[in-house]
Amino acid sequence: MVESNYDILGISEGTTEKEIRDAFRRLALQYHSDRGGENEQFIKIKQAYEDLKVGKKYPDTDIERLKNSRVYSDESDSDVRRKNLIIGQQLSKEMLTAQEWAAALNRTNTTGTRLFGSKTLGEIELERKANGALSIKGNFMAGTLEYDGSIIMQGNITSPSWTSEFRSIIHITKGDFKLVNPHENKYKIENGAKIIVDDGNIEVGNIFGRKFRVDDPDGRVGVYKISENRTEIISPNGKIVAENVVNTVTLNGETVIVLNVEDDVTISAREILFYGSKLTYDSIIKVKEGGSIRFFETFSIQGLSGDAKIELENGKIVRLFDLKTKKIRDLSDEFVPNKEKYQKDETLVGKGFTITYDMINNLSKKPQKSSSGWKSKFGFKKV
Image 1: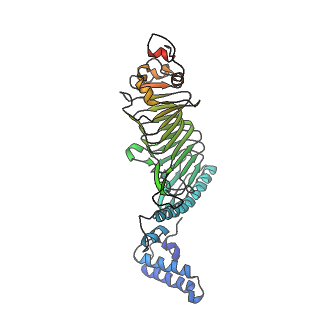
Image 2: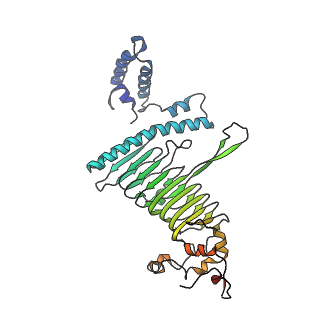
Image 3: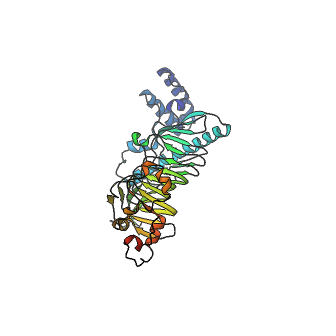
């Protein structure tokens, strides 16, 4: 935890001005360089005393000192990198402590609550519940947290912009990850953060990655390259439920349920369900063998770009736009996979359309000669 100015002076909160002054004088005599003390420690003590005189509980962080210096500029890339590096270093240490604390409670099967971070860096509260779940309240901004149990979170998850060393990663080895009412609370996961659930489900809200332009590493003027912070949500054996997924994101699960997909998103799953109308800009839908994609938007995908693709596990690729122009929607009643299962759930019938792995695989085959219409050309048989 970050030391408060009270901690630096060795006093408790609520002490009088005289007690604060006396503590400063005592430590100043001990650490002043004229008496053989450490100059850096004396400066730290003096600053703590000055801060407490104006009611400031915590000392300035490196970021705040940088902001207050004469050379500081919000427009400088180097300053932004330095700020992110400082935040990443400090918060990563806090998350390591948090991970060890939560693991200790798990081993003894006890409950507990503790704050991590600081008011200047941002605080998060961790609570280990009686059922073994870990509750997180606050914004997760850097570092790795691994937990052997479910996590229920109220807050956003982001990641440092300019370094992958302190990337925000939440890893659950057993259990589920859930954001509490993410739509109502407008919680989001962004900027290259990563959530991994080994054997459970993930329920989140909006997910954003980030692309940004950086100067040429060789120093050529006017030359730039595009870098990216790809946000990843991974649940290889479970279900991922998300809302809008935008700009450099990867979702990998057994089942993925999503609203809209926009701009360089990769979804890999056996069963993929879309409830929105947008699938745009270099997005790739990877379907595992025996799987399917189901769209629930009533009038097909209205916001579909021509570069959106479907890729099968065997490597075959087809543009979704080509399927749409072939009126693939008309096949929804005849080629719904596991039709009996869908008929048991009224919310999954009557709207949209379904594309199966086998349907796409058959589209790659040579058309058969027949006069019975375009369905037979692609080798479809009535079920």
